[in-house]
Amino acid sequence: MLVRKLADKDRLQEALLLLDEAQLAGLRLRERNLRELRRRLEKEGMALHPLIGPDPELWRREAAAARRTKGRQDVKKARKLHNMMVGH
Image (cartoon, rainbow, N blue to C red; front, side, top):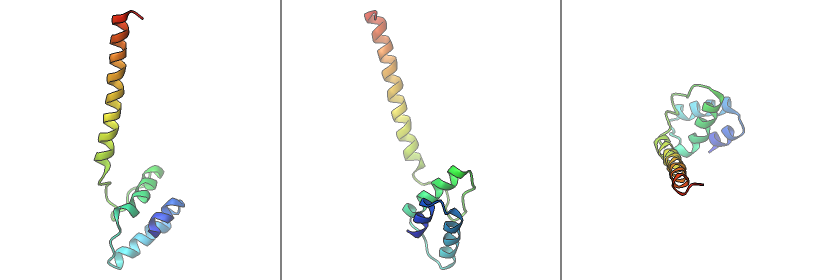
């Protein structure tokens, strides 16, 4: 939880040091505590720390975004076709 709070406050170096200390002590942090740190590191253009790893829920967010985009495109096409048929 402290790692997440440090990442919220943009104290990335301290968060990474704490992550290293946790690993040395044999502790494993939950994904919800690493999510914000991963997001901040990507935003800053920094390489991910080996202990953080890739985002396990990235596929879900990408699929949701693709569904939203696809729906909007279909609506645009349907409106265009409707307008062509009606003559507006």
